[in-house]
Image (cartoon, rainbow, N blue to C red):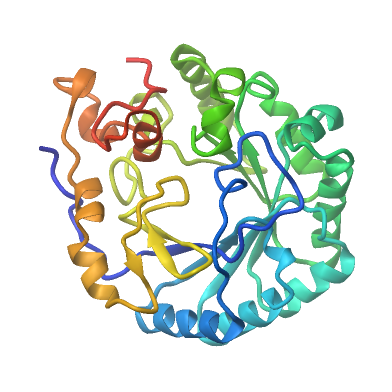
Length: 334
């Protein structure tokens, strides 16, 4: 059995918070578009913020669904800011005009991410199943720059863009983006249904990451980030992450609209409910989280020299495709 993380944090560093599953898009890869769930009222959301502040969780990132669909987003963010939390969010950009950008800044957001998956408008619109979405997303980046709010860009790497990620980086430069996240394809929700059409082969993932890590090393004007532990054996990978393997369940947790906690948005296993159960008991004693923190090497991971660093790769992807945390990440090329 692999060693557990060397230090058990007293709480996650980040809560990724889905305020609502509602969205004005219907993206091909979305983990949550087919989900439905109760949404909590503003008063309960503030109770959750009180709990997170009490546990000294430093970061909240609102996702979805589309966060801007909730009219109380600005009030919630301002309350979290008052409580000392650092607030960010991810948006598809459709509702993020200049007026919304001004409200986001006034609410205390530290940064706002916009999803753009291709520098070609038609490809982005098709991937997001929304004509005109590229123009809106680029306009959202410009609105954020106009009000002086730090912007990031999120791009899900798939068959439509893995050979053209440099164009995405150039697009980010042209619109004042500070950081680009090149996200791995997760195989959850609609991503699982459309996996054969959109996902890369293991060798294609290796080739992409070798190239992308080299570009990252040669880039000084833009921060390029990855969230995929399967790359840990490649040249150019940062050798000293806070934790080995997947960070979910170790550095981050996910909140559903009804207050249920899951390890991440892509693993639909409920740890407990933040409003009804003791947080420390869930964080320290959850069988689900502890299983993720102490993965065993199975299949081709057994005896692999890279396992100590990658811990089997993306736990969410392994679980989505096999139902077992400890099975090898299907993206692994070894």
